[in-house]
Length: 182
Image 1 (cartoon, rainbow, N blue to C red):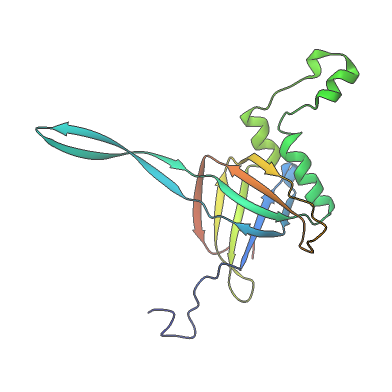
Image 2: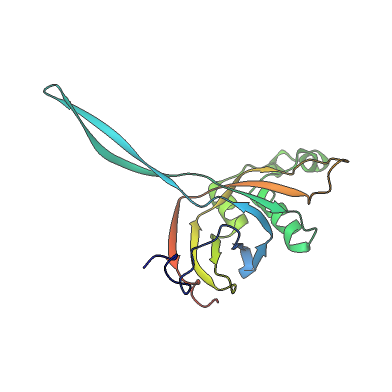
């Protein structure tokens, strides 16, 4: 039965969602987000030519980046998240190295440290009109690929935002709320 035939069935709405980060140490925080792109994928292809014809075969699955626009809420959780995305991923500020004089204090970002900095999973929760979770996406092994801290503008009264692009290995969709959550 289609949603336009019954008042009891409601379609999903683009403006009903939550973005949840499971931070290291078991801390879970929901960040105010203005926009989040849902996961998407492409299936590669290989072609085979045989007797004047071309045949195509599906190849490997590649998951696309998820971009999100976060509202800079000036809260401790948001500041913690922004610091975790880069510093805890292994980045060392060149000023930190120059003050100690020890080249060994320098570091580089590794996949493990980048994933650990953000947590093992990022959840995109889709909500109904009562705020209940209808379904949720789980981004597995996510890490921050890019961060843009927005613009300052005297002529604007809009909220400050931070654009984050997340890279991940694969995504999963589940109907209903995450286990143990409402």
